[in-house]
Image (cartoon, rainbow, N blue to C red):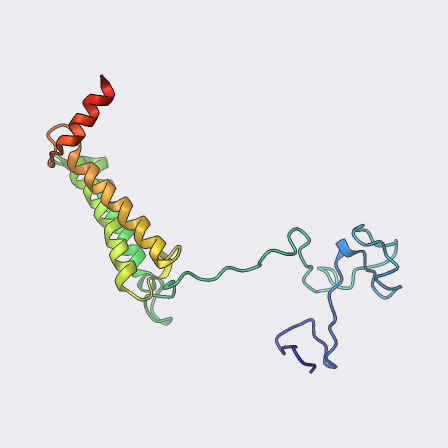
Length: 192
């Protein structure tokens, strides 16, 4: 193998030369002429020519849409499985399931309204679920699909949204559980 080539590269031949796949957008033809003879960027090969690689030839045809963009994204930090690979799927995603079940319970309480102040308690449960997601994201090294972005961004997003939802549930009218005097003054100032 030549220098700088890897054995996992399917476009590398045994003698170390690169066999670049032919793209329809480059105008290269299979077996006839060279790439310099074909008009680059035309997209159509001359009649009777078949592409060197493609679905008909059994190969994977390369994408022509965005050739310079990345083809893959990195997994977020801590985005690995929360349990071993031989564990069942729900066990591998227990952090996400814990947050979703807690938030779902809060939504169910709000929807069913089984007791007085149910909307406030259910809404607070949704906020606590998000704050719990932030705590899990901070403490647990691998949280599975609960990791969406970087650890810092997830902490700020989950924590701030959870805190705001809990605070809104506490100051909701009528008879708020938390009385913030500046909030009442701000409302009176804006309504004047």
